[in-house]
Length: 172
Image 1 (cartoon, helix red, strand yellow):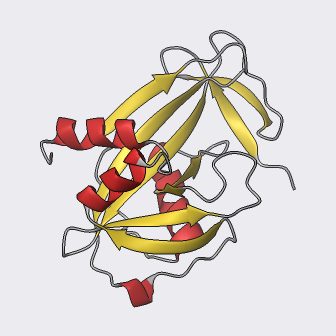
Image 2: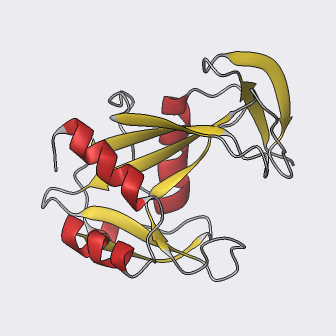
């Protein structure tokens, strides 16, 4: 079954158009929505996952949990779905508002999107993490310094945006 997505306008309002995510080419003024989840444990470490080697983009790189918002979902709905799907952790019914949002426009590739970054502090340990969906081949609980070191090697996705999010939140 194809995953369907809502199309948003430049003001981040749903347009009413729903299309398959696979192969979507978005034109000027068309956007989809993604979420990213900075999941922090009680020791101040972040849950990061390593992308599988068969990914066409960023294979083997490290990242945080996230994904596309499906048609009819809110950003918070997608967060509550993606975390259990990807890492097997429970998410509270009430989630905080995103700590940071940004927009990407790439008309050449038809890759226009909004991203909401959430910062969740959850009570969990490494033994609670279950890589469920096969998209990741490993995980770590990493300090921000360890994440920064991966970024310096060029093997951590979305680093600059995550840094901006934590700075905006006053964490860094």
